[in-house]
Image (tube, rainbow over the protein chains, first blue to last red):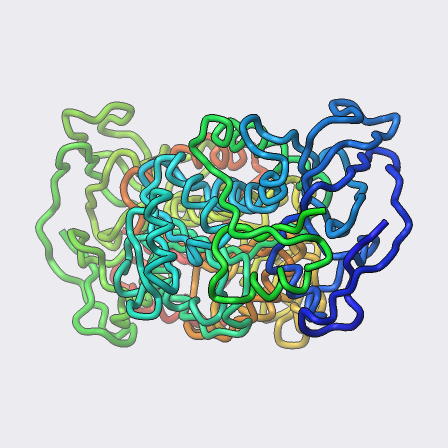
Length: 320
Length: 320
Protein backbone atom coordinates (compact mmCIF):
# COMPACT_ATOMS: atom_id res chain seq x y z
CA UNK A 1 0.00 0.00 0.00
CA UNK A 2 1.02 3.66 -0.33
CA UNK A 3 1.90 5.55 2.86
CA UNK A 4 3.49 8.86 3.84
CA UNK A 5 6.70 8.66 5.89
CA UNK A 6 9.44 11.07 6.90
CA UNK A 7 12.69 10.68 4.91
CA UNK A 8 14.59 12.69 7.51
CA UNK A 9 13.46 15.20 10.15
CA UNK A 10 12.81 18.65 8.68
CA UNK A 11 10.43 20.62 6.47
CA UNK A 12 7.41 19.45 4.45
CA UNK A 13 9.72 18.52 1.54
CA UNK A 14 10.93 15.56 3.63
CA UNK A 15 7.55 13.82 3.37
CA UNK A 16 7.61 11.03 0.79
CA UNK A 17 5.19 8.47 -0.61
CA UNK A 18 6.48 4.96 0.19
CA UNK A 19 5.26 1.46 -0.61
CA UNK A 20 4.62 -0.40 2.68
CA UNK A 21 3.11 -3.81 3.51
CA UNK A 22 -0.64 -3.64 4.18
CA UNK A 23 -1.15 -4.24 7.94
CA UNK A 24 -3.54 -6.86 9.29
CA UNK A 25 -5.86 -6.69 12.30
CA UNK A 26 -4.30 -8.26 15.43
CA UNK A 27 -6.34 -9.32 18.49
CA UNK A 28 -8.81 -6.59 19.50
CA UNK A 29 -8.15 -4.68 16.30
CA UNK A 30 -10.01 -3.46 13.24
CA UNK A 31 -8.43 -3.02 9.76
CA UNK A 32 -9.68 0.12 8.04
CA UNK A 33 -9.47 0.94 4.32
CA UNK A 34 -8.74 4.65 4.64
CA UNK A 35 -10.91 7.24 2.86
CA UNK A 36 -9.40 10.33 4.49
CA UNK A 37 -6.85 11.23 7.17
CA UNK A 38 -6.92 14.27 9.49
CA UNK A 39 -3.84 16.43 9.94
CA UNK A 40 -2.70 17.52 13.39
CA UNK A 41 0.01 19.81 14.79
CA UNK A 42 1.54 16.68 16.31
CA UNK A 43 2.19 15.40 12.76
CA UNK A 44 4.22 18.54 12.06
CA UNK A 45 6.18 18.06 15.29
CA UNK A 46 6.81 14.43 14.38
CA UNK A 47 7.95 15.43 10.86
CA UNK A 48 10.41 17.88 12.43
CA UNK A 49 11.76 15.13 14.71
CA UNK A 50 10.43 16.59 17.98
CA UNK A 51 7.69 14.05 18.66
CA UNK A 52 8.84 10.50 17.93
CA UNK A 53 6.11 7.82 17.76
CA UNK A 54 5.63 5.97 21.09
CA UNK A 55 7.20 2.48 21.35
CA UNK A 56 5.32 0.00 19.15
CA UNK A 57 3.56 2.69 17.09
CA UNK A 58 3.83 2.98 13.30
CA UNK A 59 6.37 5.45 11.89
CA UNK A 60 3.82 6.36 9.22
CA UNK A 61 2.36 9.80 10.06
CA UNK A 62 -1.29 10.33 10.97
CA UNK A 63 -3.34 10.23 14.18
CA UNK A 64 -6.87 9.91 12.80
CA UNK A 65 -8.73 8.57 9.77
CA UNK A 66 -12.12 7.80 8.35
CA UNK A 67 -12.79 4.81 6.13
CA UNK A 68 -14.48 1.49 5.56
CA UNK A 69 -13.97 -1.51 7.85
CA UNK A 70 -12.08 -4.10 5.80
CA UNK A 71 -11.69 -6.79 8.45
CA UNK A 72 -12.23 -7.25 12.20
CA UNK A 73 -10.34 -9.63 14.51
CA UNK A 74 -12.31 -12.62 15.81
CA UNK A 75 -12.55 -11.16 19.33
CA UNK A 76 -13.98 -7.80 18.20
CA UNK A 77 -17.68 -7.09 18.54
CA UNK A 78 -19.62 -4.01 17.52
CA UNK A 79 -18.01 -3.54 14.10
CA UNK A 80 -18.24 -5.55 10.87
CA UNK A 81 -16.67 -5.38 7.40
CA UNK A 82 -18.26 -2.60 5.34
CA UNK A 83 -19.04 -0.30 8.28
CA UNK A 84 -18.29 3.37 7.77
CA UNK A 85 -16.09 4.45 10.66
CA UNK A 86 -13.55 6.95 11.92
CA UNK A 87 -10.78 6.22 14.41
CA UNK A 88 -8.24 7.71 16.78
CA UNK A 89 -4.76 6.33 15.99
CA UNK A 90 -1.34 6.25 17.62
CA UNK A 91 0.14 6.59 14.12
CA UNK A 92 -0.23 5.21 10.60
CA UNK A 93 -3.12 7.30 9.29
CA UNK A 94 -1.50 8.76 6.14
CA UNK A 95 -1.89 5.43 4.31
CA UNK A 96 -4.29 3.31 2.30
CA UNK A 97 -4.93 0.94 5.21
CA UNK A 98 -4.48 1.14 8.98
CA UNK A 99 -5.14 -1.24 11.88
CA UNK A 100 -6.40 0.14 15.17
CA UNK A 101 -7.75 -1.15 18.53
CA UNK A 102 -11.53 -1.44 18.22
CA UNK A 103 -12.01 0.70 21.35
CA UNK A 104 -10.60 3.66 19.37
CA UNK A 105 -13.11 3.27 16.51
CA UNK A 106 -16.37 5.22 16.17
CA UNK A 107 -19.16 5.01 13.60
CA UNK A 108 -19.34 7.93 11.16
CA UNK A 109 -22.03 10.15 12.75
CA UNK A 110 -25.34 10.31 10.88
CA UNK A 111 -25.42 13.30 8.56
CA UNK A 112 -21.63 13.63 8.28
CA UNK A 113 -19.82 12.86 5.00
CA UNK A 114 -17.25 10.10 5.40
CA UNK A 115 -14.41 12.42 4.31
CA UNK A 116 -15.32 15.06 6.90
CA UNK A 117 -15.44 12.40 9.61
CA UNK A 118 -11.65 11.99 9.31
CA UNK A 119 -11.28 15.28 11.15
CA UNK A 120 -13.46 14.33 14.12
CA UNK A 121 -11.64 11.75 16.29
CA UNK A 122 -8.70 13.89 17.48
CA UNK A 123 -10.66 17.07 18.06
CA UNK A 124 -13.61 15.39 19.73
CA UNK A 125 -11.42 13.25 22.01
CA UNK A 126 -9.12 16.19 22.83
CA UNK A 127 -11.93 18.63 23.54
CA UNK A 128 -14.11 16.26 25.57
CA UNK A 129 -11.22 14.79 27.60
CA UNK A 130 -9.84 18.21 28.50
CA UNK A 131 -12.93 20.38 28.89
CA UNK A 132 -15.13 17.76 30.49
CA UNK A 133 -12.96 15.09 32.12
CA UNK A 134 -9.93 17.19 33.17
CA UNK A 135 -11.39 20.68 33.67
CA UNK A 136 -15.00 19.77 34.56
CA UNK A 137 -16.44 22.70 32.58
CA UNK A 138 -19.96 23.37 33.87
CA UNK A 139 -22.98 25.17 32.41
CA UNK A 140 -22.81 28.91 33.10
CA UNK A 141 -19.03 28.95 33.39
CA UNK A 142 -16.75 30.95 31.09
CA UNK A 143 -14.18 29.14 28.96
CA UNK A 144 -11.31 30.70 26.99
CA UNK A 145 -10.20 28.84 23.86
CA UNK A 146 -6.91 29.87 22.31
CA UNK A 147 -6.59 29.41 18.55
CA UNK A 148 -10.35 29.54 18.18
CA UNK A 149 -10.32 29.03 14.40
CA UNK A 150 -8.13 25.91 14.47
CA UNK A 151 -9.47 22.39 14.14
CA UNK A 152 -9.56 22.00 17.92
CA UNK A 153 -10.75 25.55 18.42
CA UNK A 154 -13.74 25.36 16.05
CA UNK A 155 -14.87 22.11 17.69
CA UNK A 156 -14.24 23.40 21.24
CA UNK A 157 -16.34 26.54 20.68
CA UNK A 158 -19.33 24.47 19.58
CA UNK A 159 -18.86 21.84 22.30
CA UNK A 160 -18.61 24.45 25.07
CA UNK A 161 -21.67 26.32 23.77
CA UNK A 162 -23.61 23.05 23.71
CA UNK A 163 -22.57 22.52 27.37
CA UNK A 164 -24.03 25.94 28.22
CA UNK A 165 -20.77 27.82 28.76
CA UNK A 166 -19.87 31.40 27.79
CA UNK A 167 -17.07 31.15 25.23
CA UNK A 168 -14.15 33.55 24.76
CA UNK A 169 -11.60 32.96 21.99
CA UNK A 170 -8.32 34.34 20.76
CA UNK A 171 -7.25 34.34 17.11
CA UNK A 172 -4.88 36.34 14.94
CA UNK A 173 -7.18 37.98 12.37
CA UNK A 174 -10.63 39.46 12.11
CA UNK A 175 -11.60 36.85 9.50
CA UNK A 176 -10.73 34.06 11.92
CA UNK A 177 -12.61 35.80 14.72
CA UNK A 178 -15.63 36.14 12.42
CA UNK A 179 -15.61 32.36 11.94
CA UNK A 180 -15.43 31.88 15.74
CA UNK A 181 -18.36 34.26 16.18
CA UNK A 182 -20.42 32.36 13.59
CA UNK A 183 -19.76 29.16 15.56
CA UNK A 184 -21.16 30.81 18.70
CA UNK A 185 -18.18 32.37 20.48
CA UNK A 186 -19.32 35.24 22.72
CA UNK A 187 -16.07 37.16 23.32
CA UNK A 188 -13.66 37.62 20.40
CA UNK A 189 -10.07 38.70 21.12
CA UNK A 190 -7.50 39.51 18.43
CA UNK A 191 -4.22 38.57 20.13
CA UNK A 192 -2.30 40.88 17.79
CA UNK A 193 -4.05 43.98 19.14
CA UNK A 194 -5.44 42.99 22.56
CA UNK A 195 -3.97 41.54 25.80
CA UNK A 196 -6.32 38.69 26.67
CA UNK A 197 -4.91 38.50 30.23
CA UNK A 198 -6.10 42.07 30.84
CA UNK A 199 -9.37 41.90 28.87
CA UNK A 200 -10.45 38.77 30.76
CA UNK A 201 -8.70 39.42 34.09
CA UNK A 202 -10.03 37.12 36.86
CA UNK A 203 -13.04 36.13 34.71
CA UNK A 204 -12.30 32.75 33.12
CA UNK A 205 -13.20 29.44 34.76
CA UNK A 206 -11.52 27.15 32.23
CA UNK A 207 -8.78 27.78 29.63
CA UNK A 208 -7.91 25.42 26.77
CA UNK A 209 -4.37 26.47 25.85
CA UNK A 210 -2.15 25.46 22.92
CA UNK A 211 0.62 28.04 23.52
CA UNK A 212 2.33 27.06 26.77
CA UNK A 213 5.19 29.15 28.16
CA UNK A 214 4.50 32.44 26.40
CA UNK A 215 0.92 32.58 27.71
CA UNK A 216 1.35 31.05 31.18
CA UNK A 217 1.32 34.22 33.28
CA UNK A 218 -1.40 35.80 31.11
CA UNK A 219 -3.50 32.67 31.45
CA UNK A 220 -3.15 32.74 35.25
CA UNK A 221 -4.11 36.42 35.15
CA UNK A 222 -7.29 35.57 33.22
CA UNK A 223 -8.28 32.73 35.60
CA UNK A 224 -11.14 33.30 38.01
CA UNK A 225 -11.18 31.87 41.52
CA UNK A 226 -11.24 28.05 41.32
CA UNK A 227 -10.18 28.33 37.66
CA UNK A 228 -8.59 25.51 35.66
CA UNK A 229 -5.94 26.01 32.99
CA UNK A 230 -5.31 23.06 30.67
CA UNK A 231 -2.32 23.26 28.34
CA UNK A 232 -2.35 20.80 25.44
CA UNK A 233 0.25 22.39 23.15
CA UNK A 234 3.53 24.25 23.46
CA UNK A 235 3.56 26.44 20.35
CA UNK A 236 4.81 29.33 22.51
CA UNK A 237 7.65 27.48 24.21
CA UNK A 238 8.35 25.21 27.12
CA UNK A 239 10.07 27.08 29.97
CA UNK A 240 8.22 29.83 31.83
CA UNK A 241 8.31 31.72 35.08
CA UNK A 242 5.36 31.07 37.36
CA UNK A 243 4.22 33.06 40.38
CA UNK A 244 2.75 30.30 42.52
CA UNK A 245 1.09 32.78 44.84
CA UNK A 246 -0.94 34.16 41.91
CA UNK A 247 -2.21 30.61 41.36
CA UNK A 248 -2.76 29.93 45.07
CA UNK A 249 -4.76 33.10 45.72
CA UNK A 250 -7.18 31.86 43.05
CA UNK A 251 -7.01 28.22 44.13
CA UNK A 252 -6.08 27.62 40.49
CA UNK A 253 -5.25 24.35 38.77
CA UNK A 254 -2.76 24.00 35.93
CA UNK A 255 -2.92 20.69 34.06
CA UNK A 256 -0.82 19.76 31.02
CA UNK A 257 -2.08 16.82 29.01
CA UNK A 258 -1.64 14.92 25.78
CA UNK A 259 -3.84 12.36 24.07
CA UNK A 260 -1.43 10.21 22.10
CA UNK A 261 0.56 8.95 25.11
CA UNK A 262 -2.46 7.82 27.10
CA UNK A 263 -2.74 4.08 27.76
CA UNK A 264 -5.40 2.10 25.90
CA UNK A 265 -7.85 2.02 28.83
CA UNK A 266 -7.87 5.82 29.04
CA UNK A 267 -8.35 6.17 25.27
CA UNK A 268 -11.18 3.64 25.42
CA UNK A 269 -12.89 5.55 28.19
CA UNK A 270 -12.52 8.87 26.31
CA UNK A 271 -13.84 7.41 23.02
CA UNK A 272 -16.75 5.85 24.87
CA UNK A 273 -17.65 9.25 26.39
CA UNK A 274 -17.26 10.93 22.96
CA UNK A 275 -19.76 8.48 21.50
CA UNK A 276 -22.14 9.11 24.38
CA UNK A 277 -21.81 12.92 24.63
CA UNK A 278 -20.33 14.40 21.44
CA UNK A 279 -21.79 12.12 18.74
CA UNK A 280 -25.42 13.06 19.54
CA UNK A 281 -24.41 16.76 19.44
CA UNK A 282 -22.92 16.22 15.97
CA UNK A 283 -25.93 14.23 14.78
CA UNK A 284 -28.33 16.96 15.99
CA UNK A 285 -26.29 19.62 14.16
CA UNK A 286 -25.22 21.39 17.37
CA UNK A 287 -21.60 20.65 16.45
CA UNK A 288 -20.57 20.84 12.79
CA UNK A 289 -17.28 19.48 11.46
CA UNK A 290 -15.31 22.46 10.15
CA UNK A 291 -13.03 21.43 7.28
CA UNK A 292 -10.58 24.04 6.03
CA UNK A 293 -9.16 22.23 3.02
CA UNK A 294 -8.56 18.69 1.69
CA UNK A 295 -5.53 17.50 -0.33
CA UNK A 296 -4.81 14.20 -2.08
CA UNK A 297 -2.54 11.82 -0.11
CA UNK A 298 0.41 12.38 -2.43
CA UNK A 299 0.21 16.15 -1.74
CA UNK A 300 0.92 15.65 1.98
CA UNK A 301 3.80 18.14 1.81
CA UNK A 302 1.47 20.78 0.38
CA UNK A 303 -1.09 19.98 3.08
CA UNK A 304 1.54 20.44 5.82
CA UNK A 305 2.56 23.80 4.32
CA UNK A 306 -1.08 24.89 4.42
CA UNK A 307 -1.56 23.72 8.04
CA UNK A 308 1.53 25.67 9.09
CA UNK A 309 0.48 28.83 7.23
CA UNK A 310 -1.52 31.57 8.89
CA UNK A 311 -4.34 30.93 6.37
CA UNK A 312 -5.44 27.64 7.86
CA UNK A 313 -8.82 27.43 9.61
CA UNK A 314 -10.68 24.31 10.69
CA UNK A 315 -9.35 20.84 9.92
CA UNK A 316 -6.98 20.01 7.07
CA UNK A 317 -7.52 16.57 5.50
CA UNK A 318 -5.79 14.14 3.13
CA UNK A 319 -7.97 12.05 0.85
CA UNK A 320 -7.01 8.69 -0.58
CA UNK B 1 -12.93 39.06 76.94
CA UNK B 2 -9.18 38.56 76.49
CA UNK B 3 -7.88 38.10 72.95
CA UNK B 4 -4.53 38.06 71.15
CA UNK B 5 -3.99 40.69 68.46
CA UNK B 6 -1.05 42.02 66.51
CA UNK B 7 0.24 45.43 67.71
CA UNK B 8 2.16 45.92 64.47
CA UNK B 9 3.41 43.47 61.83
CA UNK B 10 6.61 41.73 62.89
CA UNK B 11 8.04 39.12 65.26
CA UNK B 12 6.31 37.20 68.08
CA UNK B 13 6.99 40.11 70.46
CA UNK B 14 4.28 42.05 68.63
CA UNK B 15 1.53 39.77 69.91
CA UNK B 16 -0.40 41.34 72.78
CA UNK B 17 -3.27 40.43 75.09
CA UNK B 18 -6.13 42.87 74.54
CA UNK B 19 -9.55 43.32 76.08
CA UNK B 20 -12.22 42.98 73.34
CA UNK B 21 -16.02 42.87 73.39
CA UNK B 22 -17.40 39.33 73.61
CA UNK B 23 -18.96 38.51 70.21
CA UNK B 24 -22.50 37.21 69.84
CA UNK B 25 -23.88 34.59 67.47
CA UNK B 26 -25.46 36.14 64.35
CA UNK B 27 -27.84 34.26 62.02
CA UNK B 28 -26.52 30.77 61.24
CA UNK B 29 -23.82 31.09 63.89
CA UNK B 30 -22.70 29.38 67.08
CA UNK B 31 -20.94 31.16 69.97
CA UNK B 32 -18.17 29.03 71.45
CA UNK B 33 -16.50 29.49 74.85
CA UNK B 34 -12.96 28.59 73.82
CA UNK B 35 -11.02 25.86 75.68
CA UNK B 36 -8.04 25.70 73.30
CA UNK B 37 -6.91 27.23 70.00
CA UNK B 38 -4.73 25.58 67.34
CA UNK B 39 -1.74 27.43 65.86
CA UNK B 40 -1.11 27.48 62.13
CA UNK B 41 1.61 28.78 59.80
CA UNK B 42 -0.99 31.18 58.45
CA UNK B 43 -1.10 32.84 61.91
CA UNK B 44 2.63 33.51 61.65
CA UNK B 45 2.18 34.94 58.15
CA UNK B 46 -0.67 37.14 59.42
CA UNK B 47 1.44 38.31 62.38
CA UNK B 48 4.20 39.29 59.93
CA UNK B 49 1.71 41.27 57.82
CA UNK B 50 1.80 38.96 54.80
CA UNK B 51 -1.65 37.41 55.17
CA UNK B 52 -4.27 40.00 56.12
CA UNK B 53 -7.64 38.67 57.33
CA UNK B 54 -10.24 38.46 54.51
CA UNK B 55 -12.89 41.23 54.40
CA UNK B 56 -15.31 40.88 57.31
CA UNK B 57 -13.06 38.53 59.32
CA UNK B 58 -11.85 39.24 62.85
CA UNK B 59 -8.38 40.77 63.25
CA UNK B 60 -7.87 38.50 66.27
CA UNK B 61 -5.50 35.66 65.29
CA UNK B 62 -6.58 32.02 65.21
CA UNK B 63 -8.12 29.73 62.59
CA UNK B 64 -9.41 26.87 64.80
CA UNK B 65 -10.60 26.21 68.34
CA UNK B 66 -12.21 23.68 70.59
CA UNK B 67 -14.64 24.62 73.33
CA UNK B 68 -18.14 24.55 74.73
CA UNK B 69 -21.16 25.87 72.86
CA UNK B 70 -22.36 28.94 74.78
CA UNK B 71 -25.25 29.97 72.54
CA UNK B 72 -26.72 29.09 69.14
CA UNK B 73 -28.68 31.40 66.83
CA UNK B 74 -32.38 30.62 66.45
CA UNK B 75 -31.96 29.27 62.93
CA UNK B 76 -29.20 26.80 63.84
CA UNK B 77 -29.99 23.13 64.27
CA UNK B 78 -27.68 20.28 65.24
CA UNK B 79 -25.91 22.09 68.10
CA UNK B 80 -27.06 23.19 71.55
CA UNK B 81 -25.56 25.08 74.49
CA UNK B 82 -23.18 22.83 76.44
CA UNK B 83 -22.04 20.74 73.45
CA UNK B 84 -18.32 20.02 73.24
CA UNK B 85 -17.19 21.12 69.77
CA UNK B 86 -14.31 22.19 67.63
CA UNK B 87 -14.50 24.59 64.69
CA UNK B 88 -12.78 25.92 61.61
CA UNK B 89 -12.57 29.74 61.75
CA UNK B 90 -11.78 32.59 59.39
CA UNK B 91 -10.12 34.31 62.37
CA UNK B 92 -10.73 35.09 66.06
CA UNK B 93 -9.58 31.83 67.68
CA UNK B 94 -6.96 33.23 70.10
CA UNK B 95 -9.68 34.50 72.45
CA UNK B 96 -12.03 33.50 75.24
CA UNK B 97 -15.06 33.45 72.95
CA UNK B 98 -15.57 33.17 69.19
CA UNK B 99 -18.62 33.10 66.91
CA UNK B 100 -18.57 30.90 63.83
CA UNK B 101 -20.99 29.68 61.11
CA UNK B 102 -22.58 26.44 62.34
CA UNK B 103 -21.54 24.66 59.12
CA UNK B 104 -17.90 25.02 60.26
CA UNK B 105 -18.52 23.37 63.64
CA UNK B 106 -17.86 19.70 64.44
CA UNK B 107 -18.49 17.66 67.59
CA UNK B 108 -15.36 16.70 69.55
CA UNK B 109 -14.71 13.13 68.32
CA UNK B 110 -15.36 10.36 70.85
CA UNK B 111 -12.15 9.44 72.65
CA UNK B 112 -10.40 12.77 72.00
CA UNK B 113 -9.67 15.23 74.85
CA UNK B 114 -11.32 18.61 74.26
CA UNK B 115 -7.94 20.39 74.31
CA UNK B 116 -6.49 18.09 71.65
CA UNK B 117 -9.56 18.63 69.47
CA UNK B 118 -8.47 22.28 68.94
CA UNK B 119 -5.77 20.98 66.61
CA UNK B 120 -8.11 18.96 64.40
CA UNK B 121 -10.25 21.29 62.26
CA UNK B 122 -7.51 22.90 60.12
CA UNK B 123 -5.49 19.73 59.55
CA UNK B 124 -8.48 17.50 58.87
CA UNK B 125 -10.12 19.99 56.50
CA UNK B 126 -6.82 20.76 54.76
CA UNK B 127 -5.81 17.13 54.35
CA UNK B 128 -9.20 15.82 53.24
CA UNK B 129 -9.93 18.70 50.85
CA UNK B 130 -6.53 18.43 49.16
CA UNK B 131 -5.80 14.70 49.16
CA UNK B 132 -9.34 13.52 48.52
CA UNK B 133 -11.32 16.33 46.86
CA UNK B 134 -8.55 18.05 44.85
CA UNK B 135 -6.04 15.25 44.18
CA UNK B 136 -8.40 12.23 44.27
CA UNK B 137 -5.83 10.04 46.09
CA UNK B 138 -6.81 6.39 45.55
CA UNK B 139 -5.96 3.16 47.37
CA UNK B 140 -2.67 1.71 46.12
CA UNK B 141 -1.33 5.06 44.96
CA UNK B 142 1.83 6.66 46.35
CA UNK B 143 1.63 10.03 48.08
CA UNK B 144 4.53 12.29 49.08
CA UNK B 145 3.97 14.51 52.12
CA UNK B 146 6.45 17.32 52.70
CA UNK B 147 7.01 18.34 56.32
CA UNK B 148 5.84 14.94 57.53
CA UNK B 149 6.25 15.76 61.23
CA UNK B 150 4.22 18.99 61.12
CA UNK B 151 0.64 19.26 62.27
CA UNK B 152 -0.62 18.78 58.73
CA UNK B 153 2.05 16.16 57.98
CA UNK B 154 1.31 13.92 60.96
CA UNK B 155 -2.41 13.98 60.14
CA UNK B 156 -1.83 13.48 56.39
CA UNK B 157 0.36 10.40 56.95
CA UNK B 158 -2.35 8.69 58.98
CA UNK B 159 -5.16 9.77 56.66
CA UNK B 160 -3.35 8.53 53.54
CA UNK B 161 -2.48 5.21 55.20
CA UNK B 162 -6.12 4.78 56.20
CA UNK B 163 -7.06 5.37 52.53
CA UNK B 164 -4.69 2.54 51.52
CA UNK B 165 -1.93 4.66 49.98
CA UNK B 166 1.84 4.16 50.16
CA UNK B 167 3.24 7.17 52.02
CA UNK B 168 6.58 8.90 51.44
CA UNK B 169 7.59 11.86 53.62
CA UNK B 170 10.32 14.46 53.85
CA UNK B 171 11.55 15.97 57.12
CA UNK B 172 14.71 17.65 58.35
CA UNK B 173 15.93 15.29 61.13
CA UNK B 174 16.06 11.61 61.95
CA UNK B 175 13.97 12.19 65.07
CA UNK B 176 11.21 13.74 62.96
CA UNK B 177 11.43 10.91 60.43
CA UNK B 178 11.16 8.41 63.30
CA UNK B 179 7.88 10.05 64.31
CA UNK B 180 6.66 9.81 60.69
CA UNK B 181 7.63 6.13 60.59
CA UNK B 182 5.73 5.44 63.83
CA UNK B 183 2.65 7.03 62.26
CA UNK B 184 2.91 4.63 59.30
CA UNK B 185 5.00 6.41 56.67
CA UNK B 186 6.67 3.88 54.35
CA UNK B 187 9.44 5.94 52.73
CA UNK B 188 11.41 8.37 54.94
CA UNK B 189 13.54 11.05 53.25
CA UNK B 190 15.82 13.46 55.12
CA UNK B 191 15.79 16.54 52.88
CA UNK B 192 19.11 17.70 54.36
CA UNK B 193 20.97 14.67 52.99
CA UNK B 194 18.77 13.29 50.16
CA UNK B 195 17.28 14.71 46.94
CA UNK B 196 13.65 13.60 47.05
CA UNK B 197 13.20 14.43 43.34
CA UNK B 198 15.83 11.80 42.49
CA UNK B 199 14.91 9.22 45.15
CA UNK B 200 11.26 9.23 44.06
CA UNK B 201 11.75 10.04 40.35
CA UNK B 202 8.54 9.35 38.33
CA UNK B 203 7.03 7.37 41.25
CA UNK B 204 4.62 9.65 43.11
CA UNK B 205 0.93 9.92 42.23
CA UNK B 206 0.06 12.75 44.63
CA UNK B 207 2.22 15.35 46.40
CA UNK B 208 1.06 17.53 49.30
CA UNK B 209 3.51 20.43 49.23
CA UNK B 210 4.08 23.28 51.69
CA UNK B 211 7.29 24.64 50.12
CA UNK B 212 6.29 26.10 46.73
CA UNK B 213 8.91 27.62 44.42
CA UNK B 214 12.04 25.92 45.80
CA UNK B 215 10.55 22.44 45.33
CA UNK B 216 8.54 22.92 42.12
CA UNK B 217 10.91 21.30 39.62
CA UNK B 218 11.82 18.53 42.09
CA UNK B 219 8.15 17.87 42.72
CA UNK B 220 7.48 17.58 38.98
CA UNK B 221 10.47 15.23 38.73
CA UNK B 222 8.98 13.01 41.44
CA UNK B 223 5.51 12.90 39.80
CA UNK B 224 4.43 9.71 38.06
CA UNK B 225 2.34 9.74 34.88
CA UNK B 226 -1.09 11.25 35.67
CA UNK B 227 0.39 12.64 38.91
CA UNK B 228 -1.13 15.51 40.90
CA UNK B 229 0.90 18.13 42.79
CA UNK B 230 -0.99 20.23 45.31
CA UNK B 231 0.81 23.20 46.85
CA UNK B 232 -0.77 24.61 50.01
CA UNK B 233 2.14 26.65 51.39
CA UNK B 234 4.96 28.82 50.06
CA UNK B 235 7.65 28.42 52.72
CA UNK B 236 10.21 28.06 49.91
CA UNK B 237 9.21 31.13 47.91
CA UNK B 238 6.74 32.23 45.31
CA UNK B 239 8.42 32.59 41.90
CA UNK B 240 9.80 29.52 40.11
CA UNK B 241 10.79 28.38 36.67
CA UNK B 242 8.60 25.62 35.25
CA UNK B 243 9.30 23.33 32.31
CA UNK B 244 5.78 22.80 31.00
CA UNK B 245 6.89 19.94 28.76
CA UNK B 246 8.05 17.99 31.84
CA UNK B 247 4.51 18.36 33.20
CA UNK B 248 2.86 17.60 29.84
CA UNK B 249 4.83 14.41 29.20
CA UNK B 250 3.43 13.11 32.52
CA UNK B 251 -0.04 14.58 31.98
CA UNK B 252 0.59 16.20 35.37
CA UNK B 253 -1.65 18.55 37.31
CA UNK B 254 -0.41 21.36 39.54
CA UNK B 255 -3.02 22.83 41.87
CA UNK B 256 -2.42 25.55 44.45
CA UNK B 257 -5.07 25.90 47.12
CA UNK B 258 -5.90 27.58 50.39
CA UNK B 259 -8.61 26.89 52.92
CA UNK B 260 -9.22 30.24 54.57
CA UNK B 261 -10.32 32.07 51.42
CA UNK B 262 -12.89 29.49 50.37
CA UNK B 263 -16.53 30.67 50.35
CA UNK B 264 -18.88 29.36 53.03
CA UNK B 265 -20.49 26.71 50.79
CA UNK B 266 -17.10 25.12 50.03
CA UNK B 267 -16.12 25.13 53.71
CA UNK B 268 -19.47 23.59 54.59
CA UNK B 269 -19.00 20.84 52.05
CA UNK B 270 -15.46 20.12 53.28
CA UNK B 271 -16.51 20.03 56.96
CA UNK B 272 -19.39 17.75 56.08
CA UNK B 273 -16.99 15.33 54.32
CA UNK B 274 -14.57 15.53 57.27
CA UNK B 275 -17.36 14.51 59.62
CA UNK B 276 -18.33 11.65 57.29
CA UNK B 277 -14.82 10.36 56.42
CA UNK B 278 -12.22 11.60 58.94
CA UNK B 279 -14.20 11.61 62.20
CA UNK B 280 -14.86 7.84 62.12
CA UNK B 281 -11.14 7.27 61.45
CA UNK B 282 -10.28 9.36 64.52
CA UNK B 283 -12.92 7.64 66.66
CA UNK B 284 -11.60 4.20 65.65
CA UNK B 285 -8.03 5.21 66.55
CA UNK B 286 -6.78 4.97 62.94
CA UNK B 287 -5.91 8.69 63.11
CA UNK B 288 -4.53 10.12 66.36
CA UNK B 289 -4.26 13.84 67.07
CA UNK B 290 -0.53 14.61 67.44
CA UNK B 291 0.03 17.53 69.81
CA UNK B 292 3.56 18.88 70.08
CA UNK B 293 3.11 21.36 72.89
CA UNK B 294 0.46 23.52 74.55
CA UNK B 295 0.94 27.05 75.96
CA UNK B 296 -1.39 29.32 77.97
CA UNK B 297 -3.16 32.03 75.90
CA UNK B 298 -1.03 34.83 77.38
CA UNK B 299 2.14 33.02 76.20
CA UNK B 300 1.09 33.26 72.51
CA UNK B 301 4.44 34.89 71.65
CA UNK B 302 6.29 31.93 73.18
CA UNK B 303 4.02 29.53 71.29
CA UNK B 304 4.77 31.30 67.98
CA UNK B 305 8.52 31.11 68.69
CA UNK B 306 8.16 27.35 69.29
CA UNK B 307 6.10 26.84 66.09
CA UNK B 308 8.74 28.67 64.06
CA UNK B 309 11.63 26.73 65.64
CA UNK B 310 12.99 23.57 64.09
CA UNK B 311 11.97 21.69 67.27
CA UNK B 312 8.27 21.77 66.59
CA UNK B 313 6.45 18.51 65.72
CA UNK B 314 2.69 17.94 65.59
CA UNK B 315 0.23 20.66 66.51
CA UNK B 316 0.99 23.60 68.82
CA UNK B 317 -1.96 24.74 70.96
CA UNK B 318 -2.97 27.65 73.20
CA UNK B 319 -5.16 26.88 76.20
CA UNK B 320 -7.50 29.36 77.84
